[in-house]
Image (cartoon, rainbow, N blue to C red; front, side, top):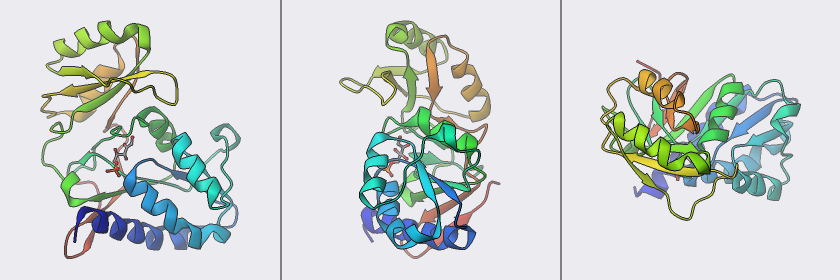
Length: 224
Ligand SMILES: O=C(CO)[C@H](O)[C@H](O)COP(=O)(O)O
């Protein structure tokens, strides 16, 4: 199976996982990226079984609306039954790096409101130590150079993601060469830098379940 087929397989597994949990008034949180896009396409078949969705990006909101799924403002919603999204890396604790698609801040907010985070990923995302994928950090534009200097003090090598403006009007620094042995601690340390809006470590609140696409099967993994 190629990578797209693995992504389709985990999207299918997520549909099967989520279907029995849906009620007529359920609201889903929907993420961003190519794996989430496969899931959105398949969500068409369940669209009469739940009330609507909150999206982590304008791109996902547009796709959902095209299917006739109601997209709600998160401020109108008190709970999301589940949040379904991909990841750039996951370790065995289901701590994640996310934000390759620049949607990390909204993803973190949606995750915070969701009862359950169902992460969907192909096996290339499975790592023993987080950090080979550069860690995205969303930054207020005027703080970019200051935040970059602070990230260097933490041992990273930040690179400005040229030409990218997030849905929130901010910029992204991708931090290379971090070997993240304590993701929970690093997540908090980076959040404390003035000018940082959010960072792509989902360790304080990672995934509750990971549907991991391997060539022979989709594995269902829980945090170790
Ligand atoms: O965090 C994300 C977007 O900000 C995505 O979930 C992550 O980049 C994975 O993307 P893909 O499913 O395309 O591999």
